[in-house]
Image 1 (cartoon, rainbow, N blue to C red):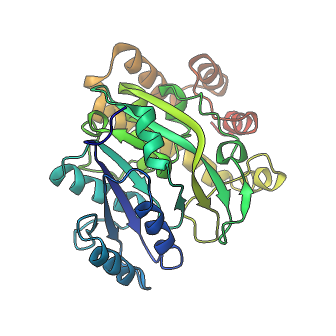
Image 2: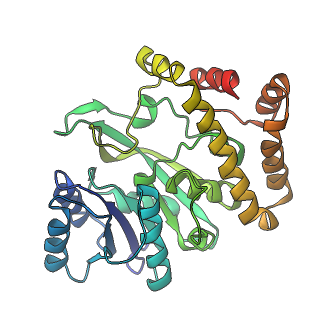
Length: 313
């Protein structure tokens, strides 16, 4: 595929990221696909992050741009959406990507993603596997997907309503999908990547690339981080947090309700039926909830997580 005229807008949200930020930006600069622009917004860092951003903007003035003066942010999700809103408004981009401040992009990350998504007028999203590493880039797991016990084949709307398996820092989506992203209010949205995955699952396609394209740092300051859901420690930690689990489930319904308010008039009939049935779940009795989840595919990614889902739903 000829990619010479295609361009990519990369949205990088930062906060107190001085330790790893330079490595991350250098890995973007070293990409085999070079027709990209990097838009960075810092959310009030108290370390050297603003200084590092300034240095890279001065070094690559036609490639890297500082959006830190734009109002918004307050959380990782809000910061990413603030950047994306500005980029959508003022840039003419073919593709869009999110970028975390503490990872390392492998050299062919952008090229591989563009090759997989192709050129299309249909809304499309691709995402990839990641290699999990520690703060010094020593390997923890060769596959984030396997380590986290995720199943990228479960990419239909029903599954994505319940649990997101699309990692934001690996995503690339096209202009057609980006046009559908409503950025006016984000309060009921759980995470930026989950929201875009929901839109892609309901209006377009999601494609998974099994090749890792990122060294994904697992360290104490991660906002989310990789979790080994097969471990006993993970199960015990979840069982000790009844209230937070129930609140998390409720927030998925809040997000689905907001999705209904934003997109229901545009959804195909079968997608409307799926969404309506999901929103009816809280009103059902326990056995009815479990039956509906199984019948409609409102299931989490792994057996352990599904059992927990049935306990707390």
